Length: 397
Ligand SMILES: Nc1ncnc2c1ncn2[C@@H]1O[C@H](COP(=O)(O)OP(=O)(O)OP(=O)(O)O)[C@@H](O)[C@H]1O
Ligand SMILES: [Mg+2]
Image 1 (tube, rainbow, N blue to C red):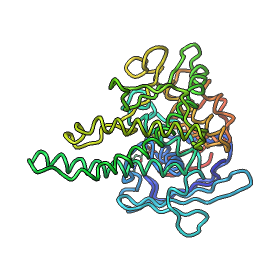
Image 2 (cartoon, rainbow, N blue to C red; image 1 turned 45 degrees about the vertical axis):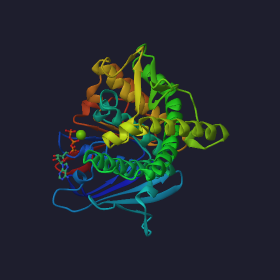
Image 3 (tube, rainbow, N blue to C red; image 1 turned 90 degrees about the vertical axis):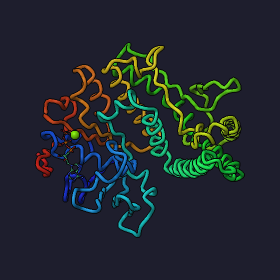
Image 4 (tube, rainbow, N blue to C red; image 1 turned 90 degrees about the horizontal axis):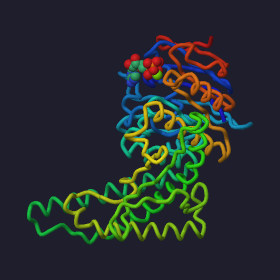
């Protein structure tokens, strides 16, 4: 697929922008702070309903305005769709498809598909487990939009369970006769049920990503690997140790079609989560927070025998992050429908060899959007349309 036209209203620094786009490579070039990333961030937002730069929506709305609108004309084969998102910080966002009446924002997932490479990706390797969980969960939703519901269900159940635990913890501290914990059993069931589903999806994804990430790393940095992805769950085994799940311990088909094997694996994960919740209940009531479940897990990224975090060099970490994105691209592509590739400021960070390799790998993409501060940062193989971005104007060169 590709985006044929992007319109922005009060998004970031743009009061208005109308940008006609072609398939193939397009480079946005201009000095720092002129709005290049803002443009591609808008496309990323349509694809993930989240920005790669900020966790909340408020910074996405132009200062002084109260909402932003991002609209894209999307071409998939001979089909055209117009998707529109209105971003309302602090209130529900609104969405429309083909100018018809409103749909849930979640319903636009899957229309714009994109893989975004950005300097922020370094946090995938060097940052907290939350960065890696988000990476997995966003990719799950990008591949199978209906699973956005699993993630939001889990967050809702977790929040409610935490509220209950917090109340119990407060009651205990104040010497009360203890909160009513009978409802906690019900919430344990909910948490373990949705948690097992989320966990199963993540394990499947990790198994699918493993060989692709290894291959991509080898292409970017020959001889530098191998890389290994290890999902580290918070479910303890019978000895109470933290458990690593074997990569390839697949629990369902791609996108999580719960086949018989998948269902058995989910039952197993459900049982283990229930057990872990029972084991930690005392501690949870003391601390007033849920201590086990997919929200506590991590994806350990290994380079050779060592974890990349804490051991890998800057260049290695950066190549690792790029390899994860390239692997995501391969997966989305294999699912059907080429995603838009966005490379925000990535070439400046790479040495000449890696720059050329990355450029060669992405160049055949149906649509590749590149941002760079200077023309020289865009590798020669990425010839295509150029736009200058300066002072809030986006002009085709
Ligand atoms: N909500 C907002 N309202 C108004 N201006 C904003 C908003 N958010 C960001 N900006 C402005 O947008 C500019 C940053 O744009 P952007 O990140 O796209 O720059 P860039 O061209 O990618 O620069 P660089 O080359 O440094 O990456 C900044 O000047 C910033 O002040
Ligand atoms: Mg930028």
